[in-house]
Image (cartoon, rainbow, N blue to C red; front, side):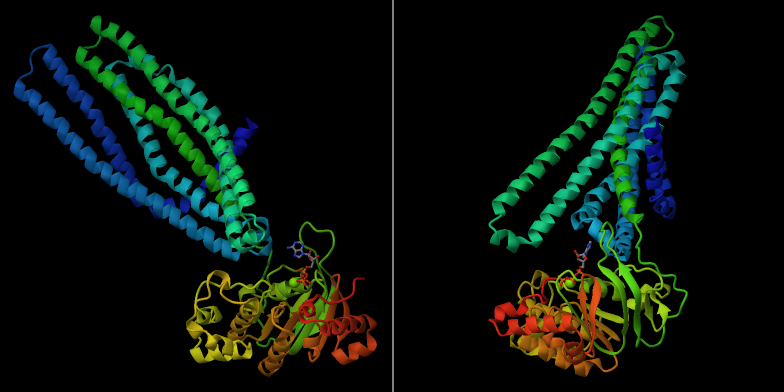
Length: 600
Ligand SMILES: Nc1ncnc2c1ncn2[C@@H]1O[C@H](COP(=O)(O)OP(=O)(O)OP(=O)(O)O)[C@@H](O)[C@H]1O
Ligand SMILES: [Mg+2]
């Protein structure tokens, strides 16, 4: 019972998602319902005409033209039913599509507000399944489900009214088996909900599997994993089918059972109704009309099971969607302070950052003042460099009073405004299946071709682009597959340079270019930087020797800080790393990209 109430309250929460769409489209929905009711009322007139005809025949009082008139009346009613059915289809099914679109847009806009933590928790496949399969279930529930539900409810009430008008006791006899159906529907509803949730989750997993497999297709092929992956997919498919069959078994119980109950009612009516007719309590015409009404009742009773299952699916899916909409970004912004005019001083004070579910902090007690010029961040893999970049690009949440822009706590500043001051080149480059020009001008679509070319030149990629057959109009394939790793990185850098923002963060964005090119780019950046803050992460110290300040991160802590020459003289840890790395540069080039630093 407790479970049932919990389920009811969850359903209520989920249903609140569709209320706004109902309010906005109330006229459309209301007109649709009126059309359904009109169809039902007209349908209910047909047995009355049949009754008149049968009674007339019984008493031999009906003439041929009168019979023809009855027939024509039935045809006219059928025509109006057809027109009205078109009407409710247009209105209600149209509404269900509007609702689907609204929910899809709400969900998409909401997803764009969420932070890294959310996307680490939920897979892309799951989110794609939500916006395809789950939204489709909601659409069906509030389209066909709602029509069939309204039709069934109204038809049941009206039919029972007409039946009771003919003979109340016979009506009670006819509906006596129905409570069994009501009990069965309630019991099976909860089971249906559980099984449908499982099936939808499995569909999410399947979608995610296909997505990740296709995204890493080159890896799959290189490791000759095609057969293995197909096998895994096959197993997942089998499990999905098995659970779908289990779901169909629950639905399959409900539907025929409703039919069985309806036929039991028919048996009772033929037996008792026949007796009432013989005894003269009702006329033959009334008996025929009564059985016609009972036939009409069969559909709503059968529909009850179907509608229950459609709504069950719709509400389960709404619950899954509402689970995403209930998620909120952990990035807080009280926006109490106006963003300072300048972005000349970023200050980090005693910052410790631990990823959710981790015991060890990724950054520990970091204090740092960042002024215009180049800040080089080096450190071995896993030392916390990207974590620091995420925080400074406002992608990961921080505690209050740990990061300041011009002495204002960044948690009090607008996130969007703050981000609009930062150009960020992530460690994992993201390019789109578009032209090079479009990829560079992402975020600054008003940029002229001259500006695009200038940014590309600073990123040392202009000449290579010009050598391509279609130059800046070359299409680079999905995720830039047609480019080398180094080319991809420099296009991403050009994109960030074009944004022309006061803070530039390059998270290991030059790791795939050779050392000479890296040095050339950093030298070119010196001209670009002027009074900008530029944070460059690299595994290697060499390209950053001219940085105004260098920090070495080690297990989340700052192990060395200062200018290169000064550090070489005063910091033995730094000097050791430098020696270690420079000894590597004299070895063959492929070793030159080895992560730096001795193991501690
Ligand atoms: N999303 C995450 N959830 C949990 N732990 C994480 C997450 N991202 C990073 N870490 C952990 O935080 C630490 C710092 O990671 P970070 O990515 O900042 O290192 P990095 O210095 O950028 O390394 P690399 O040079 O390999 O890019 C590592 O121990 C890593 O395992
Ligand atoms: Mg990193």
